[in-house]
Image (cartoon, rainbow, N blue to C red; front, side, top):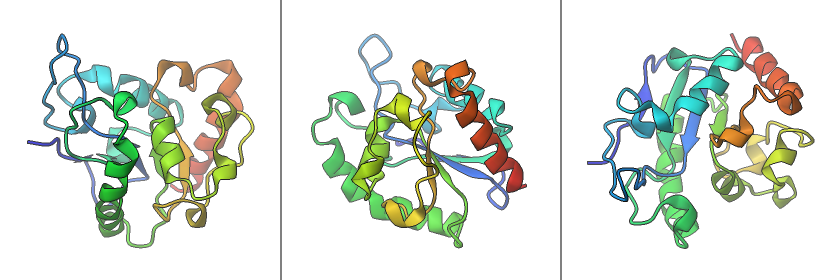
Length: 184
């Protein structure tokens, strides 16, 4: 069974958090089956860094709707899956419908947890920069009309290199904090 999305309060969340897919081989090379996306409530190693970044910008578990673009387990993890973009393209319409049902006005932004996913979503390829540059020089959020989801998106990478507590990313953390404070 595929992991379920996670959302404490479907009528009042402030951000979507979007991952790539649930595939992992973290049990000594074997897939770990997850009840909820990112193993929320089951194994914090998949969501720990995302949650730390969320907390740093003033968001908490009750403020988010968490899902993967591809909800089915894949044979290969995202970084090794040469067919990932093709499969992501096949899943895109379903995610758009799901997000539109949860947020029909398309005002809730999406925090994108991986560079491969971020690049896939862009329709404006000029926004396709190295991850560290996205946090320091890019114009964000990427406007709804410049990405395939049709809603504002921010890079919010889960890799430990992109912890918002890093002083190099303090301006980006402040931008995110201000954005979500304004939306209260």
